[in-house]
Length: 313
Ligand code: GLU
Image (cartoon, rainbow, N blue to C red):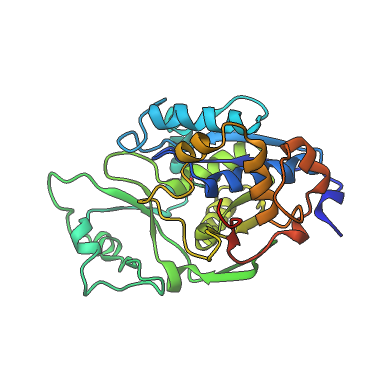
């Protein structure tokens, strides 16, 4: 059944991190979140993930461009824009809930220790925490003096599995494959994993459309959802956008960067058409608006693997 025949209207969201100017891959994600929600008669929210003030200053230049690029494309969102940088007190409450459950512990390990060549690594090459600070705490040894800790959540040796609506079945044993992860950094900034779970739940988000690079974050987020008593949303992890030859768009060369796109295309209709054709929603690139795409939207047409921009775009 095509997904635009869903009976319950979804609450979707687009949650960009404004650490640079948007590129066409981000816009494709925004467009799919928007179309999926609108095709079900639902709503779509906008959340600015500006937790890290050093990388994303509040209402900085990148954020202004981001809002302008979304408006230019015709992406309108429901309700108020949510700013993660304004929500630390809300995250405090949920951090404390995890703490009350005995799941949080301080970690004093330095970046260098965590990234040492001898440190255990996950299958994807990222360092896997060896629980040094958990064992130290249990043994009653004092923590290092004068150092501010990050806080980690202790994960169970349990398999978290789910069916991504686009990528299919995915599972991870959190202890074996991931290990305890940071929920609050040593500078007090909350980590993405906690903020995203709290915000999606409090905003009533029922459907998450985002890049495939976040597929392996989902078991961690499902664990936090369970521990905080939230329900699990439905997930669609969308593929990467590549050039016509299947090569990753290069940020350094400014490929797909909105600055360049808008210089070449002052009008969004051919840009939307190119993305819609790359997503197989229309047979070939043509001028089209987002509203015209709503009745044509169907998840079963969307490719699972890399999405190629049309030649010469
Ligand atoms: N803020 C993340 C990003 O820009 C997306 C987070 C999410 O969709 O869960 O990549």
